[in-house]
Image (tube, rainbow, N blue to C red):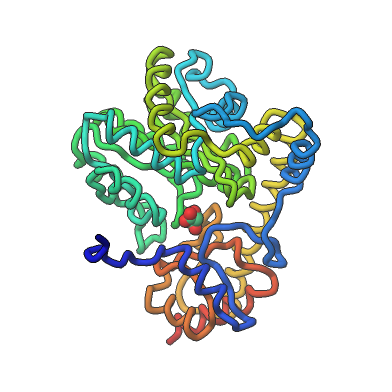
Length: 401
Ligand code: LMR
């Protein structure tokens, strides 16, 4: 039965974590996976999450019954409000739906699966070049023809805006565009507001479908509303769209898989029909979403004091990352490392797209026990005051040799 099954390649990101764990060298550094670490390089349990856990454990009315198929309304509505904003026209006009998903990956998958069944305008889906390692897999597995759109300009180490717009002009009418709502992964380069307006204009002209992926709300500008600006602008402009939300990074709930798919439609009645199909899909895939992580998010998002505390916890995480960007930049400048490095501090979110080549990344791993993705992406959350010197010296060496 299984004779013909070929070996699949290991996952580009999680395989690095495995290699890092197996490495016995005390100087090893994991700057592969996008997971926040404290300056002591320990996982961070948000204090507000601990408070919500205490509330949960002391709540004697709670049980372990099945959740509703699309998740608790208190959770999905709070997630929708978080991304669309409390004054969103889509919320006021009741033309939205929310589905609890298995974190951001599940939101991408469920959204893609729905489109593969009900979206007839195009079979083409465009993802940025480069993008998160999982986008291509997710969309091609449900039958889309996945193409790249221009995004990163290696010369300016910034956004290739003209290339992006041109790709939208050249794409078949109605194609799906996967857009990073903020803190682009892996480049850390987002369009400006003016550029977003230009993108929306071409998408409108070409009837392209905006499929937003939002895994880092709170990490781009440190402000949850600012980070949702692009999505909110598209909604104001009257687009129908999907937004995938992950609470892995901004709540530090990596293992609990708490996510949401926000759907904006033209009418309330459409939203109901669309939701009914999502419930049908969800039933066949996971039946009911998991309760623990989503209950924590639900408690925090629906309590003004806890919400405020959450924004402070988020501030701590985003500030530490910004400090590490400065530290790495300063170290490279002090070493006189050939090249320009200001992109490290200019880029935003959890990642820095260093411009290091795959051959240099390989030496960093083999000689220095530093683990990062082949495309030269550094997860800044894995950099600390104790390892930044070593990291900068290692980068200096591979750049010079
Ligand atoms: C990353 O890009 O490192 C994270 O989003 C983890 C993942 O799921 O790939």
